[in-house]
Amino acid sequence: MAAIEIHQFSILNDNYAVLIHDPATGATASIDAAESYPIERELEAKGWKLTDILVTHHHADHTEGIAELKDSTGCRVVGPRREAAKIPRIDLEVGEGESFKVGSIDVHVIETPGHTLGHVAYIVPAANAAFVGDTLFSLGCGRMFEGTPQGFHDALRKLAALPGETQVYCGHEYTVSNGRFALTVDPDNAALQRRMQEAEALRAKGFPTLPTTITAELATNPFLRAHVPAIQQRLGMEGAPAWQVFGELRDRKNRS
Image 1 (tube, rainbow, N blue to C red):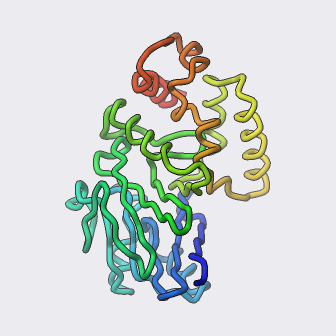
Image 2 (image 1 turned 90 degrees about the horizontal axis):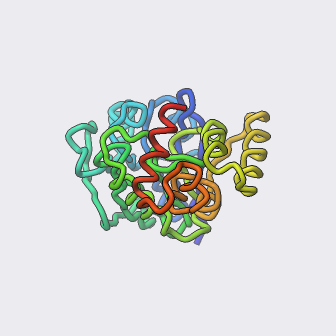
């Protein structure tokens, strides 16, 4: 059986779009749809037909291209049940622990509230890949627009429990700015220092820093490391519950 193909490309200012293609059936899914034209362009270049849009959350920079793409392709729109009223043209509503297929590809759903209350991530075990929208970023996490620190921390722990080699596709290219903040709260982390050097070199050449991996994030992302004594000490929060430390990290990042 031919391997699942994943194609990531830039869209808008700093968003990433991702296409997932099943060679066995010809099915192709877009993770979110910020705008239609770049997605149509990449589909044409690949010779793929769009069959599905998998929506992670309701924000406009992830949804504004949905209606036009559905009109032009007849694709199915899959999205979080808890945000269905805010997302145009949903055909299939999904939630925690549910699964569905894109062609012959099994897709599993994890609810990851925090950035928005209904946010979901899509896991494709056969491709060893997670499509996490704006919940988890390389060296960071999304702003907490609708959730609570404890709920957002719990959502991140779900993603952190995925296999370490999982390829993580995020909604935005924020690695360098996230890394600058991470170094203020975890300055002695040698793995973080190396990642920042690598990220800055990639961006200087115009290359993406994504996908990342769960292993890399566990070693370097402060928002997955709120339990680490060195970070807690840096914040003056030794022994505090990890979700409270996470909340302080999120507040500091907002102000940085």
